[in-house]
Length: 487
Image (cartoon, rainbow, N blue to C red):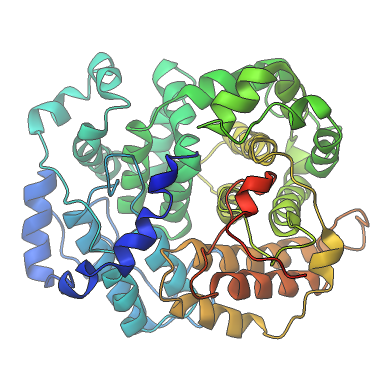
């Protein structure tokens, strides 16, 4: 959530600094990568070109193109595999001491799925390597000790143990497979799994997003990174929000009486939640909503439940609702911008089409994940100051470009670190999921050509030279101060 203001644009600064022309690492040859990965993880890597394992990234353009893709290329699959292998071998999950996330896997997989050429994939990688931190060495004694539940717990939340957790989960995934590892470490229901699930939803849901990419693209190595990333995040949001909301709901999988959209509209009308967040709050979730109005927030969150029979309908409801509030949280007198925090709820929505179909996850775990996601969406909207939603402004925005053109611009954006590419892909996927429900659900706000209009807003608003790509916490007047008026 919010970071010190002087750090807000650190990512953009690094990319535009004089360091960029100097730090242009070339791709490490496959033979060297294999050796380097062994030295970092202590795990003997299989030949890189054969199959995807917990230590080896291998993308097939036919089998591993993602839940939504456009014009995926075989040569790009090879290049993306090599680059992701190098990133895993060379870079830490955080690129600074403030916990800013390495987005390279998100970026590369997103543009690969959107038809990027090998040259574009290399350019995207090289544009985001100069500010990354090198991976730390693995302590094999610590990795071995993690098999003890007490020791595993002792290292949780400590960033220095990321390489150790990565090696540990790589070993576990190679031995047991993705399904059994997720069941044991995230969904078993014991103290360790409950703690890990809380951490998966920490850090502005970056562990969830990273894990989602691994599941979507069938890459156990990315799954290992996601689990290791979760392990070094904190768990307060689970302890203070998700678990209490679940207890208040009574059980997982109850038939939901209200849609996410209905609950969003009720939250918009609740003054207690509007007043619970202040611009000065360093963390607007923890220091705002969950400090000043925890009971009110939990009351609404607990009402979002999903039964087995409601999965498909609630999936579309979740996607449509997050697209609705992310796209329409605008100002009448300002140029359109999308909120940096809200887009994370939209960008993570795409993975749930894959998650709810995973054969190795039991239905209870799928329902629980979908319920937690919807509750997170409500909390995130509230924490941004419950912004006004101007659907009429979005509905009249000119749709000058089609999806192919939007994808091309997203892939080629010189300053994107993956957020824009994730966003446009999630939007196009959302349209595909929601269209079948337009006739049966007239209340669904995002429909028809509005999807394409939002896609145009996404690319147009992020290509303005000299202006930030995103607004942050759009419900507050202060968030819009750097932006120019359109009146």
